[in-house]
Image 1 (tube, rainbow, N blue to C red):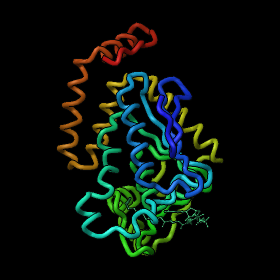
Image 2: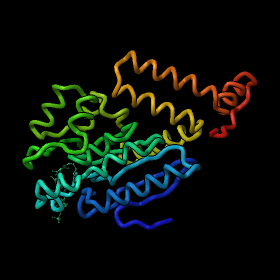
Image 3: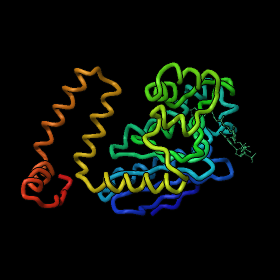
Length: 261
Ligand code: CO8
């Protein structure tokens, strides 16, 4: 495969794509070339039929300490708006149809917190630190933080975090449901993410894709429309081979052999 400068890419378990942010000198600050590499790796995993789920992590010290402040400090409004600065970030969530687990250790600040929240499932280690410190730089979250953090932990807590720039601890993240699980150590967190990804990848990719799609719809639709959407997708799955295989295997007391069709 391709070699990257700012990320490490591997497939450590069956069906699992693994990306480690690797810009240690800048605490994985998200410079444009890093984001382009990340997009490229995710695109490759998206089209690789052997990959059923993806894990994204950083280092023990930092998931990512934010967008690269040195890169953006001299941007003018015309450059930021005119060139749609950071618009390519949103690619990350819109094109990846496979489940993405983000495993956070150390700093996940600003754009780093926003990137972590783009994960379908978030896990963290005991020393994870989440925050949206943009107000200290004279700006605001720019890659979805105000929306995703508010959905995740509620308005009052999100306002407090975003208006003060104060950090959220791993313990708070666990209590408030920002993350699905807080692990005992950084390695346990990454291993836990890989194990969950392996489990997801052992199922029909068609079913996993549909699960992700319907849960994500709950973020955009009202409850009645969301339930109708879910039912249509559920009905649609009766057109898949994997529905016949999965239910047939249950009835025959056998293990299903998915075809992803
Ligand atoms: N950008 C650029 N360089 C960074 C960043 C960053 N976000 N964070 C850390 N670095 C660099 C430091 O400059 C330093 O480099 P050098 O050794 O050359 O001086 C190196 O990483 C190590 O950092 P520190 O020496 O500061 O390490 P400490 O352990 O003392 O502190 C902190 C760690 C607390 C994480 C500290 O580095 C810090 O506060 N970093 C900035 C955090 C921050 O403000 N993040 C938000 C950035 S704004 C943002 O993300 C907006 C998102 C909007 C959308 C996306 C736009 C692209």
